[in-house]
Image (cartoon, rainbow, N blue to C red; front, side, top):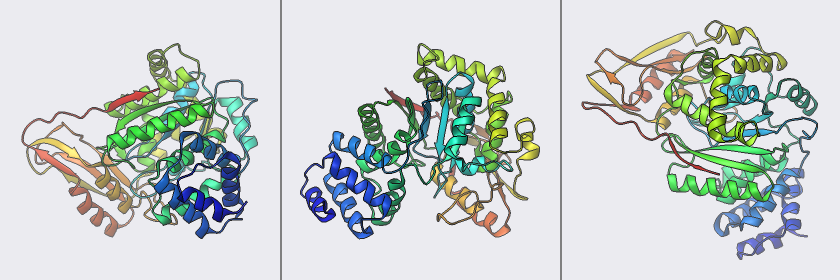
Length: 436
């Protein structure tokens, strides 16, 4: 088999069979196909697309390009969650312990932040000593003992995805729907999951801003997951405004820990947390309906069982357990802080998610390039959200950084993210649609 023939076949709009897709995935993983030829094939897919069966086949081929995480010995339904990315989206930090406290096994494989969207692994590493690079044997032992493990993608899991993702980023083929679907689901399929809950975002801070495009992605994910034998539900959520009251690694971790300690939590954060938890508990067969799963998740927060799961997870992953009891003491904020005030009477009309996210990256909370270092204590603590009344001296947000120059530049950026309206403002719908 020759890659040139496959490039020409796809360029002409023909469908690949599984053997051909397997050849491409293995060639990418093992370095047997030149980058320029893989790039040409990706561009052909970008323009000609893939049929649903072809997308499912390529997803399976990518997962089989490396080792799979064998979780058969874990005696519970294995349910993961994936978000398409946003600003202030630290939901996973609380979600995984909540679902585990309800009896679901949660092997949550996560990634790092890049650009204006944050990464779960960076947030977890704001806990001193917390390890996200775990061996498969450790992951299995931890799941058996605690029911929850949050870890990064190992080099052995779906290795073709790392190569193809980097090439897509460099060749302008990121937006290809079948390539997005196969990239997301190949890693999840490699986990040997029983089910997956997808938080598919739309709006300013989302990967796909248009709702119709996000919905199209959600439908493709569910269809492909079903063809792979994996139950999947997609919750389409609004990302016009940052989620919750924290943007940045230690700030988001602190918010989640405080919620599990009994703090009421921001309404938008709690809505998404309990909605996703309810579906995870339902797919994990620990509730008869998603609504019952919602109620069980809420009880796990209120009775402290989710907090206990978080403490077990931190201990197993070598983190400082004191964070769970005293988050404000053991999750450090950067030393420099400035306050952003409303400047006039009125109501917060909007806080643009993408602009706020970029401001957080400028503070040091994220990466513009993959090799950039993270300042875990940097970020933005929001004091007001859309619809809230303000006066001229009302603090809308506090910005944290370790460098004065970064603080001043990020302040200018953040000032462009919010608007004040003289009249009251209606909040936008948070959960637009659930597709199962």
